Amino acid sequence: MFATIYIPGFYLQAALRYEPGLREEAVAIVDDGEKPARIVQFTRAARRAGVREGMTTTQGLARCPGLTVRYRSAEQERMAGAALLQCAGCASPCIEATGDGICTLDWKGMGGLRKRARDLIEQLRGQGLIAKMGIAATPGLALLAARNGRPIFHVERLEELHGLAVSALGGSAEFCGMLRRLGIRKVGQFYELPAEGIAGRLGEEGLRHWECIAGKGTRLLKLVTAPECFEEGIEFENEIELLEPLLFMIRRFLECIAGRLEGAYLVAAALELRLGFTAGEDYARVFPIPSPTRDIETLFRMLFTHLEGFQSPHPITALHLAARPCKAVKEQLGLFETSLRDPNQFHQTLARLSALVGADRAGAPVKENTHRPDAFRMEAPAFGAGKARKVSKARGLALRRFRPPRRAHVLTVNERPASLVLEDFSAPLGEASGPWVASGEWWDREAWERTEWEVEGADGRLYRVYRDGAGWFLEGIYD
Image (cartoon, rainbow, N blue to C red; front, top):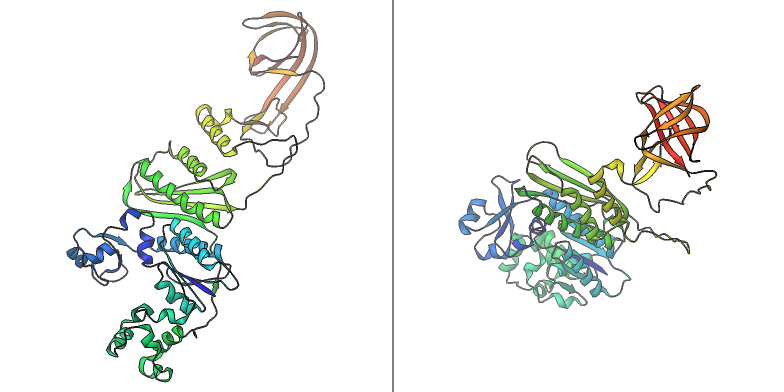
């Protein structure tokens, strides 16, 4: 058993995927590859106004002054075709890209065919594609049924096709005209013609259509693999200068991408955003997702947070959004272990804090690969990135550091600290241990050198002081 997905008016639907409000308006698709440019597809409203295939743009506007003209876009058709194949690949591993907006599936051995077809049509509707489906014993019959589906046509007996008009065969104008001259109006009348004279009278095309409705058009499918790219893009007819219309389109893109990810049982590990402008280079940015997901709200919030503060000197003319897919990862926690309730929201909050206080002042401290005392940097914590490292138990006294260190005035006797004076504190010093001389990075501009002492104050507390090229400093107090 085979099933065929048919997207009527594929060029039109590819152009109107992100403008569903225009489906009920008078819209025509023009192929500017021809000279002069000709109308190739149009909506029902345009047909009622007198627009016909093959007209020039001027002729179409003369028939329908309110006609909206859109030009064929190879990029939009490519993305619509990729969405079709990805949705079909979720319903069957054996798929064929039969033509523009046409995909054939091998459903041999599968049950619940009508329900599968309904689910697939709904999935495509979520991608902005209105589809029909045909189910039959051969690929040719399935395509014929799909063209005449409402929206599903399951051919269980060949006689079900005999009531169709011969135009439903999708033959050439010359072939259909010859049938009309012979007085043949229905598929059943065409089928009753003797097979021996079909090729002689109606040629190879006639024989091909006759074998199709006779259930003899069996062939092997030319199998393809569903594309693994999950992307959407558009070139705007009018320049975008405000954030709201841009966010509206981004949300629509995310809905399409998330729907295809869900069908493939994948999640997004990163988002790639690219903006095109009227002048200058494109803007591109990759957004890693801390906890891969396909939740639309989470992904949209991530992009909104970034674009909220984005500024460009030029209007936006193109938008492209892609998701890097990966398999969802489940982590088994121990009995007394816990994890973040929403890691993505946590990292978004951390990003906002970094924007307010600076990227070097928010995050988790990570020790630098240097001997410089107290050298560290701030990084975003990587929860669940791996097993936690075993931390050895602290031994000895703990040093409470002053950040930054407090400038001090130290009196020395025989080159040993004898008195500590601060702005709000002064005390004589007792025992002193040291000096400990440390230096490093002599090959760099950030070269450093310091002499450390650990001293006991008259109050019994232990202090750490040091001297470098800038003078004396109180680094901390031992607990």
